[in-house]
Image (tube, rainbow, N blue to C red; front, side, top):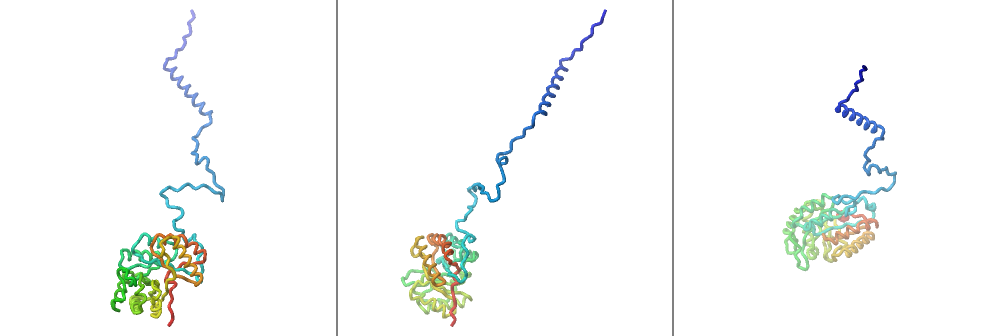
Length: 310
């Protein structure tokens, strides 16, 4: 009797393992046959291309807290070249300083030479003088002097009723408050500047106090003798040509600035006096590039003083 062959029986566990191995092999094989996929690059990288030389490219907007690309006051590097030293020169003097620091600092920040004349015995006398000097601006003592109208010119004033010694002491004290002052001009003084004795005392006190001081006559009176007396004493001196802001409006100040420029072009130089006012600041800020284009060179007040040889 023939023996029948026995068929091998696989266990259920083995079948499961074998099926798993076959499935894994199929997956691996498929992955090897398909091309690999990578994540797409960010749009800014994928589409970025180098701009050709000279091409105009867009510039991202600056964040709101970033500084402005163009300063409120044009920089000197953007201004037309200064006229030659032999061309017309214009000196701007800002009187009554030491009282309104914000606007006075705005004048100091202007990128042109100008001179701040600082009052004695006011709150910011020392601070404004120091800041102006540090910025390369001119500094003067704005010396209060007696008026014809009787209006009080403020503390530190020189009056016609003072003795010679009192005037000398007052000028000495006022100059001591502004040690950086390179010169002096009168604040008010329509009466004091017309008195030869008073002016002689003022000038003598200046000479005794400090070498090299100059005096500029603000010409608050048509009969002023200030420049004449200072010149006879050997001081470098000059006088005001134009008041800028008798009318406190920007348009009026601009008209006066142009008039001062016309005088400078006609005579070679001019001195204009203004005050720490918003209209005056706006007018100077708006017009100085125009005046430079006309050939005006802005200078310090001391640069327009001269000594008359005896």
